[in-house]
Length: 206
Image (cartoon, rainbow, N blue to C red; front, side):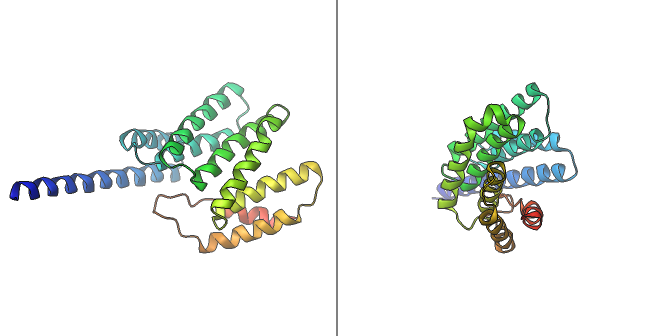
């Protein structure tokens, strides 16, 4: 009996230590990111993703970093490498956590990176896909501020491009700002970005 209890205790202890290592790694990665060393943060998230195959968050953040780096990128080869990597890691996140609205938003952002780089080439290819992703995410999580904000920003851009009414999207953006004020992330490492951008767009929205 003592042997069984010892084994059980050892397994629990190993689990606690593994979780602690995950938390330490994620905390350090965010610290690197906040200090401006995005590349070091990315590399650490990659190592955590490899060490923690059942955790979707490190994969998500590798994808997000590569998406963020791609917004102002003009070199198609660099852009392609970054967005291919983002896609690889968001696919890994999806396989761990299917139908996750946060992951859906990041997938939509990756496709939007392509559209922003070359609208003539990728607008037709990804425009409808992005809109569809946001509708599915909104159906699953209508009170998630990143879902509401990203869906509204995409709709706003489309309305301006096609010369249609932007008012519904401006209202949705204001709603997103309010949702950010009450949103509670599931964990200390769960996505919690977007409030400042939503406030900016809401202020500028006409």
